[in-house]
Image 1 (cartoon, rainbow, N blue to C red):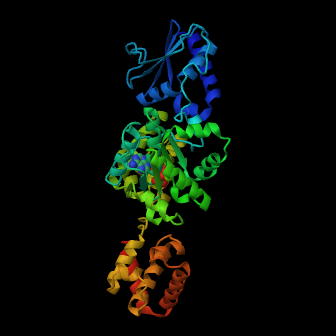
Image 2: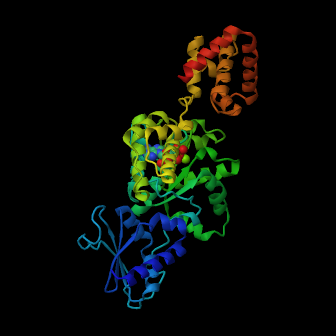
Amino acid sequence: MSDEDQGGWTRVRSRLRAEVGDDVYSSWFARMDLEAIEEGTVRLSVPTRFLKSWIQNHYAERVLACWQAEDNKIGRIELTVRSAVLKSTVAPKPRPEIAAGVNDGSNRYNGNSSGRAMSVGDPGVHEALGGSPLDARLSFDSFVIGRSNTLAHAAAKQVAAARRTDPVMFNPLYIHAGVGLGKTHLLQAITWAGNAAGERKVLYLTAEKFMYGFVSALRTQTALAFKEALRGIGVLVIDDLQFLQGKSTQAEFCHTLNALIDAGRQVVIASDRPPSDLESLDDRVRSRLAGGLVVEMGSLGEELRLEILKVRVLAARAYHPTFDVPLPVLAYIAKTVTHNGRDLEGALNRLLAHNKLTGHPVTLEMAEREVRDLIRPQEPKRVKIEDIQRVVARQYNVSRSDLLSSRRTANVVRPRQVAMYLAKTLTLRSLPEIGRRFGGRDHTTVLHAVRKIEGLVGNDMSLAEEIELLKRQLQE
Ligand code: ADP
Ligand code: MG
């Protein structure tokens, strides 16, 4: 290839970067290479099929236009997937798999020439629609499947692959799990894959974005383009639903949810708790949420953590080819950094930074030093109110329905107070929520119970011990 071609390519790249912005550029185009220019056709290559189809579906005309601005004899772009091993100089001529051409003879780029409607899959457009920013690394390819997430993963795959005409199998799909266990990863994977498949447009929103962008856009009658686009959304994905707050937002949410579900559109939701524990949502929404498929993702087991680390190291190598982490170091991190996926990522980032800055290879000693503060004792188990009720009822030889009933005999009142006290101290639930879960009691009743027990344990050693024992049982 001539120096002149390479120079042109460099200018095309900077033009493209200026047009799409740094983020989009580095997500999609950073690894695009020029293979050849022949007779008005530019041949470009990218490392994966996914990148190819993404660029082809969303940026083909953009790329062509940038070339045409550089050289008006260019009429076509061909995009190929380059093999990981063979370099283009020795590779056989890449098979042209796509041809994004505007061969109307005029050689002028016309933004509407394809007649394609704007696509939610385009990160820029996705955001303009009120969609939350997406992280290109959070794909199905980089999601590791293990015992704790098999079902959630399968359901997510199914949603991403479903076609417009397929009957909706479960709606909504509701995934819940603690922090750092892969909810956002899975939801964004659905968004990427769904949009790349091009069958149904997928819009990904955090609950926050839903509250401040989406809802206000829904309310302003002038946001016509927005409404038009909303109509075209096949899958609405909402992350961190526990943050949805405010009566009117919830009303909008309920309305949107019902409208989408009734129209046969897929809704996917992630939250840190099951629908029954979503405080302050009204009962109708709660039951609608519980009416689809509710899947919990458990904590990442050691095996799964190790696999995640391996995938991460490979991904990091794409940018830092010399980064090497010996298996014993990975095993050590997988064993000791138990918290969640975020800490695993943090641990690897430190090793990478250390390795880059000092040039020292990654060793076990270095890993022990670098990740020391990420090693914490086992995270306390998430205690559920049902479990508290069950364990307390068993301890005091009453039934769970006694605890929820309005009976006021002494043999039920004390266990009930103990259970409410434990619910307050062992979970993050609010007083009104606890009241609701104890047969629809008022929050002042719960507060009274909590104070009562607090007062008693100060003086009554045997009660204090009993409660200590119950706590230990629940947290095991
Ligand atoms: P959540 O939204 O549940 O708090 P995230 O999806 O943000 O958690 O995950 C936290 C980190 O852990 C991310 O870097 C994510 O890529 C990683 N992670 C979690 N689960 C997996 C998994 N099964 N495979 C690969 N990476 C994972
Ligand atoms: Mg998240």
